[in-house]
Length: 284
Image (cartoon, rainbow, N blue to C red):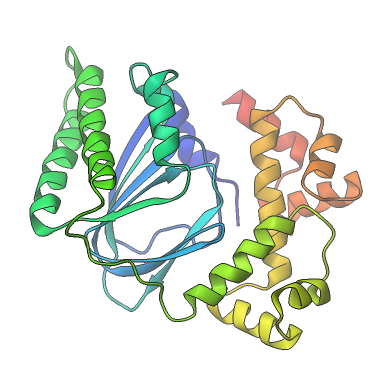
């Protein structure tokens, strides 16, 4: 796993990113990033995992959430996973620090998900096309303002579907094992920054340690210890760029007992020391 800073330098500079991806190039590890993320699934099936939520997504699924929430995706099957992705910072929206920000935060308090009908998907395609055409066009007067308007239209479209009760959507189903995995993740995300042993976790979940470890490794592809370490390091990386805290303070905040242990694990995970990570971010 490597830092998520580089891919988001464009986002920091322009406050908006739009991608259309058809390949398997997606982060396989848990990660977090600035701003908000909107994903429209064009085709394919996957699990979307966001802290203690496990959601099965497929064609027509739309997800809207805060990028700063720990999340990952696990592709299901061999088919093409095609999606359109928007990343944006609140300042990209006119009034993004005011009333609209409050509404957006309410909408993304958890992972907001809807499933579009064919007619709604066509409408969503129109709005994405407008954004993409404007983004790829030769710079012209009102270009940024046009993109802001199109994005607000898209967010309004999704928000209204939520407030209207998501009518016409198919019921959301957990994939096999998803409910058990959600319960495990819910507990891990409650104790990730505190000293915790596998025996204690298994006891709290009323599972045998053997079953817990094997089930988690089978579904997630990593061990519980690896998951907890990644969570701590990612949270630390966010604090390094967003908070005016010392490296020592951040290490203790995310659950490390000593600065040396924190520094060593941070470098093993992200390839640089905490100090270098912060310096690299500030220099860009």
